[in-house]
Image 1 (cartoon, helix red, strand yellow):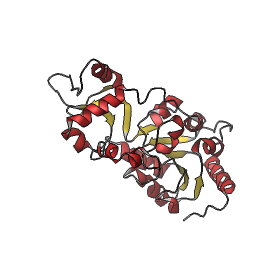
Image 2 (cartoon, one colour):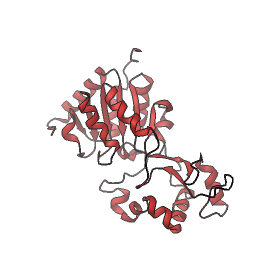
Image 3 (spheres, one colour):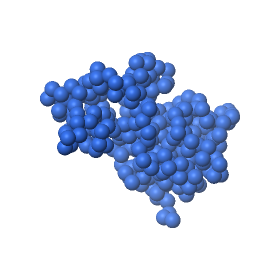
Image 4 (spheres, one colour):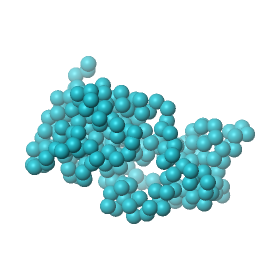
Length: 266
């Protein structure tokens, strides 16, 4: 396991490794969004820690079987649970690294869409667990802007169904629930990025959720450097070259060299 003796020294090591890397594959988790007012899931004050029933409702089998769970989900969405949520300095620092040519691929476990809102190139973002910004039909698979469905809920539909032709399938947020497969190609793209980029940076994730956490051993096996930035220990700290603990919003601008010049193309 990496010994974290001097936080400032570890921060400097992380910054040096990232500055030297020609390309960085990034994996972000809930911890990068907590300063935007979105609680994490498994932390001491996490959504699922404080309310285990909320974790149960994130299971696709429960969602399919229990209409009341679906209705509560739509009520929460209409209630404005994502209203006013904006990117924080961590998201903006990551977007700045992308603007400077440093990001190979940004894989996020988050469904909040904040990396996109911060300005990271959508072509480099893999929302491996989907997004709350869109809806999806569990029958035909068609997706739409979430606001289209929310307007129907506001008009009185408690458990909206797909209106495409004769489909009539159940609708849900375009997120990957427990028991659902990842979207086609996303995991391959994530693992390819971990192997291809010069460095893997894992931010705000406990690295407990598979299979996307396989990015870390994939990077290690490919001989790539691994930097972990998180507020608490992760399941894969022992595989990292550097582990930095602390506030992600405080750390990322410095570690990512927010004031650094653009990187040469190549």
